[in-house]
Image: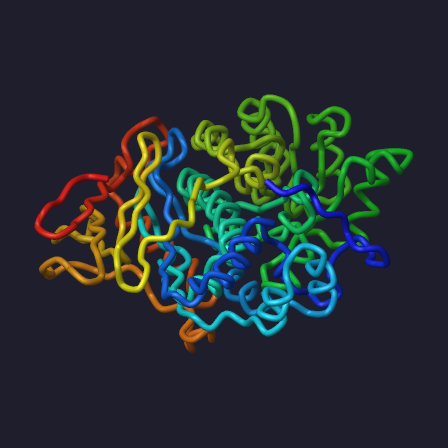
Length: 448
């Protein structure tokens, strides 16, 4: 490993003004490129495949998310003056000149956003010259490993919440850019809104929020804080009632707002017990239509435990933006084909299956998914009536494919995919993946 190279003098430290994503990569991607340019192999036609060898413990499925962000990042994967200045002390002149003119001109295809994946699923395939494809590895994995992890956790929460509303509110528990990406992944998975305004600006996600404990503490009395909030935001607002005593807080909220108050929020304590007590108290005060919003360290297991309680809205923060215990999807970016020839890594602990691959999902007559079949593109299996091919074109010749899915399209896609899973695949308990993945290579077939 080469010694770390300091930033050239005169360059400021911070985000690139150009918005380029090309330095969101690892040093060795570019030193590999330099060696390949020198020995003539940089122009060999290659295919890299993104897949997860396994799902995180306790998970039965994964959710593909981040493809839309990936398209934007590849478009901005360019080397302007600032990026070249950073690289000139590291790379030789030939490599610097190559990068100065770089724009990805290959093909990318993969599972659409909102699709489910399983161990061995070829989630993304990047094809082109070695030089153009190898340097995308880190940015591709950074996006997919984060967004798929968040969307997978969010989908589990949506599944157990049923028809109750979920709001993403984890911005303060993660990096500021991760917060925006997490809000997008959560919305794709079925959350209704986010607290993050930047996510609303970039992606059109509905945003929401009212007040924190500090607003109540600012005022001399709880009643004064509630009255101020209602005067500003209207009677349909949500009042946070657990700054002091919850029972007294609910009584004060209805006294100030009247029985048509929109909602009360409880952020701490034994949420199951408190929710039941709050519902009884609200009903007794004539506020039967006032909703109950819960927040405070919720995850899919806590939400499932509250399924029989009178909850209307869940606000989820830390568990969501950290993948609820699985902050990465564990995906890898592996070279599987060179000049049309399958290549594969073989080792005792880590291996890959060579050859460019595709996949289809097989369904029963009832519409329930039955298995995932992964096969070499050059040797597809005999089709069956209910088969559905999974990968779709994302970029061709470096350009986004027209008519790609919107974020709303991806939300609908995931809802349909979740409905197609066998019931046991939706369980939160430990178990096998919801669908078996079968690798078809030639006439042999074996589970991955």
